[in-house]
Image (tube, rainbow, N blue to C red; front, top):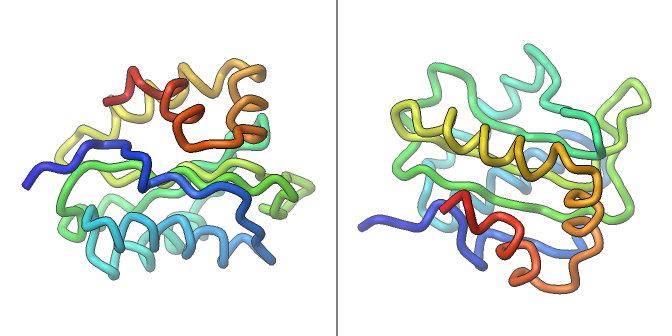
Length: 145
């Protein structure tokens, strides 16, 4: 069974998070529920965050697992969580867009480069943060699939 890297069901709109840990768990849980990763992947996402922040600037964080999390990945996939109210990722970094990544083999590098292209434009990030539907977000990321 091959899942699309990004599907409408992988997108959560209007989420509210209390803290960074909750935000990362939630983002990972979308990947677990959709069958991309085993539940153990979420712990590896939290571990990665301890090593170095996945905050990328522009209100975007890209939580993903550590190198040794690869055996927890069943399929390459992305979850997108919109947090209009923002969540504090430390050092005054507020995140309004979480993009969870799970990559099989080295596919995560291609996925990351596609996300970087979309999110390097502040205007695109604003569109995603304010999108009223998953379809609007999918349209911006259609290159990723």
